[in-house]
Length: 55
Image 1 (cartoon, rainbow, N blue to C red):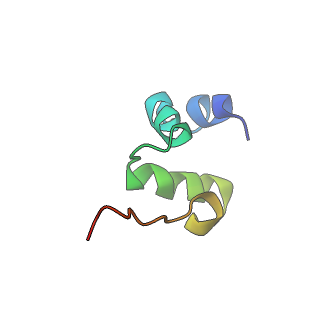
Image 2 (spheres, rainbow, N blue to C red):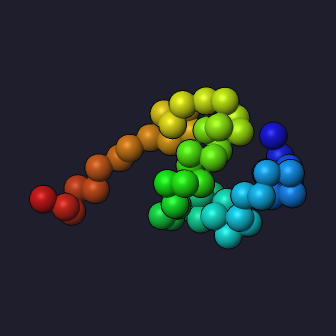
């Protein structure tokens, strides 16, 4: 699915997609919507990588 379709057809915010592409913080509601749109699980679109600096 194209980014254009996500923005125009599903109302996903362009800024959130930009943040996702840059591995920045993305709202969990956006991740939930993407999973619903793409009919997938969260682990299909992202991976948890622990921050080594946090103890």
